[in-house]
Image (cartoon, rainbow, N blue to C red):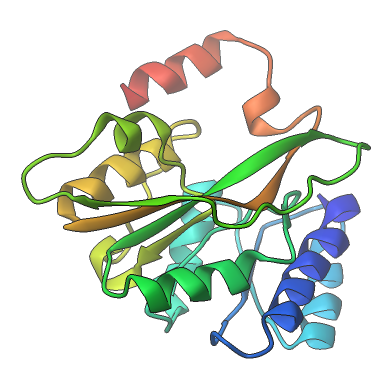
Length: 219
């Protein structure tokens, strides 16, 4: 991922600067035992932007996210893969939702996919947003559509070590378990993240016996 880390962290820095101080942001970057030079580049970029870098032995996506959660101090957490980009409106939009509808367990926004090498998507402002009371019923929109990103999750509701070790499906498992504990969810139509479609990423791997086993384990 070393070819993408600079742009990813640069996009986070741009979103923080764009917000103008409306929200307080703590950025934790995890090097999950990389072997392509990403670790040294990560240290350099974190020093430049004032982010925090963690280095650990390779343990997979869920393990990396648990490591970041173990040292996070914010009220809410949001996850970002090392090849995706935050759009300039991300924290501005999140701050608006936190002010207008405070106290929810999660705030979910939209992402747009873009092909590797293509232009990044343009941000879209808040059009509509919906509030769900989850104490009695979890709506189908959240069960089928909620993603681990770009979503703000209340850190105390997530708990410690919430991600399992499934090579595929750990995100979905986390989301389902979080919804079972959450009481209020806010869903916005604002686009705040660009999801890069690149050859070789976990979501783009061709079907294989191991991929099918991973999905069966998740089910």
